[in-house]
Length: 294
Image 1 (cartoon, one colour):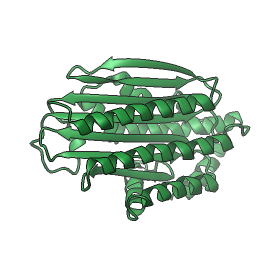
Image 2 (cartoon, helix red, strand yellow):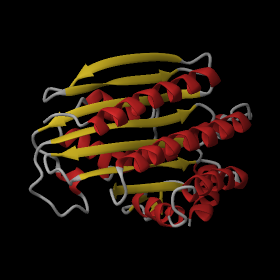
Image 3 (cartoon, rainbow, N blue to C red):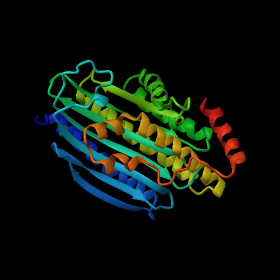
């Protein structure tokens, strides 16, 4: 299956965005190390996986780019799409997850993606971002959502309401009956306008995520914390692991499409716990967080 001129353009935009996002995180954390791995996909294409780790701001993070082709489109990519006869596909995208060192800095996630298939009229964009704090600051949440709405309104005044609702519904742990975080936006199957419109929207999604998250990092990363705060961060990171392994369509798609496992699972936090010695303090932190998330 040959790449269209639109696919090549979008692929190039995503490559540049990956480089911009990676350099922005390395600039804000000049102690962080990075490890970049180029890989090939056995059915065609490949990607560049960039891990950031051991920094004074970022404990572990990833900024990944991929552009692959395949002969069988996994079911996870066909969610809400009725045409099950789709076989050959091209897919390109960026995935970003940042696990900060300081528990007062929230974890963040970004993904944008574009699919073309062997059915000429079957192409679509998807993506979004969300914020997962352990200790909630209302002004951070307000900043996050205000910037998101402002960006969405440039394209469609209904986008923010629709996509933020979809984000809350998607990033929900059914077995825990709780949200993963304070939301953002989530969208899929965007194809009602031309590809250039959604290319621009995807680019703005990435830049708005980056602008908002860097501002939050700058405000919070020097705040002093205790081992108890760090314990609670590790406890809540467990929810992140649970969601990614049980529900995340990106993780499932990567594994179903026989992708590079090390890149797919790079989103996992560096240290996690499901137990704690200070149960009283953990329950207090948990109660405050859940009150905000409910």
